[in-house]
Length: 451
Image (cartoon, rainbow, N blue to C red; front, top):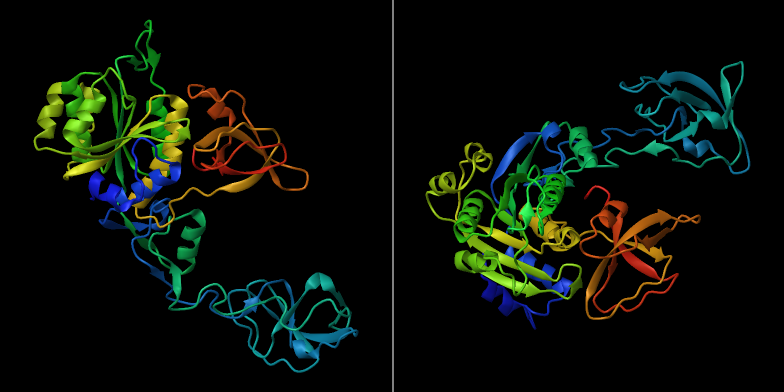
């Protein structure tokens, strides 16, 4: 893994106190590295995993020229512009087996969808475009199709020996179906990424604790759990860690010993009274950023080193609820990537979606890490100063003409978590962008399938 200093030297104009959103993603894509270990999985267990090897097609799909319609197959050269065509039906071709026989001029074969095209025939007329006669003939109306229509070619989808799916592909439901269409029962994927997370701060209450003045219940722990679970990683929940140096050190060491990445929330702002920043500096190579964005300006990134004898350290400092993880994973390594997120609930979600999720996808081995953005028309005026990226919670709908339109959910405060529930996407106002007028087009990040 590269050091903070090495990456900073690669990025022109790197300033940890004035980073754009684009700078952050460029930095993180250099910091993180994909896992290398692989495993072979049955298709039913592979959804959401990342391919570790190219899938090369062992056969052609479809394996034969076949019919795309229920109808009648015939030689298309018999079609004459402006004239109907009468053909005698000489047989029926069913899906699953080849029809055996000869078809002469003026003849056709009734054919089902997916059935192999009989030899010498290249066109299928849909049944609804024909008129049947009592003598076993059909009539095709003039100019309703052309030669070659409604025939699927051998290898039209995939040709034997060709690339079906590339290494780095995130396996979607469609991808699983494609692999299955090749007759392959398993795929080789990168091992599941392990991500540990915990919340910090003496003002944080765990569920079940009684309310107390100045304290808030920990929502970030559950939000991050949901985001990580949707991403398909192995989630290691370390709960809430009090603002005590010994406990923080054990938490970081424990997480670094067992995870590929660590996510914390809270304790990264300049002037924080807690010990989280100090412990990050002590245990790892960590940069503390002020990002030109809203919400979510403070963030810490880097790596945390692991040490030996972590189970002994953890058993002496953690309750049994945290130690329950010890028996589930014995694999250890030298450290983990750190993502120290701000404490405000909305800022946690925005920084995760904008920065952490793309970085974790790269660590998972995916070649497609940037969140896809759609374009939508703003139905309201938005105030925006150039010089920072803003992520405003929005409601995306479909206009009468089929285009997307978007409006904000109202109050954009970084502590207003209810607005994230109301939103179905983020309005992304880029670094150099200014005010948005009604009717202007903006980028939107759609939540569907992500949160």
